[in-house]
Image 1: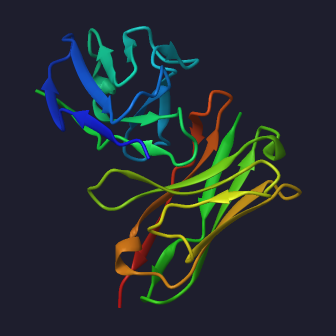
Image 2: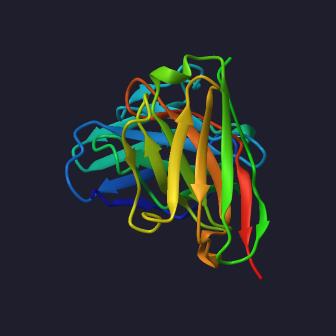
Length: 108
Length: 118
C-alpha cells in the first residue's frame, strides 16, 4: 500500500500571507493526489484532485502542484475562512484509500 | 444538491454491534462507489470500508476486516456499515463519502460519532 507523509503538522500564518503544505508518497502515484479541507461542524471539502485540478467551487487562491511522489498545496493571500485542517489523499490505487496525517493551519 | 447524511452512532460497550446508515440524495446512488472513513478524537483520517456501485465487491483494511461489513441498498439510496465486536480503538467520528469521477472523495457527510466504552 502507498503511505502518505504530510508536513508540516502545524502551520501558523496571518491573513494575506501565503502558505504551502507538502505531501510525499512512498512510491509514485503519478498525478493522483487530492487535497481536502476539514472544518468543525462542516462536511469535509474536496479542494483539488489529480494533483492540480481545482474542484468546482474551490477559490483560485488555492493551487496544487507535483507529480510522482512529491506534491504541494499552496494557498495564496490567506482568507480567515481558510484556517482549519488539510489532508492529502492518494487516488492512484483504489482501494485502499490512504491519507496524509493532516496539517492544522492556524491564525497567527 | 448532493447530500450524504450519516446516522446510527452512539455509545456502546466493547464487544457490541452497531449499524451505521448513510442516506444519499441528489445523485444516482447506484452509479457511485461508497466509502466509510473514520477519525479518532484528535487523530487523522482512516479508511474503513469501500463498496462498488452495485454492491458486489467490498474492501476493508486489516484493522476492521472480519468485524465490519459494508453494504448498500440502491433502491433505498442508503449505505450501511455493520460494525461487530466493537473495541475501544473503534471510537471515532465515522464519515461516509462518495467516490467521484476521478476516484477522489468528492462529497462527504458530516459524520456520526461512535463511542465504545464500558
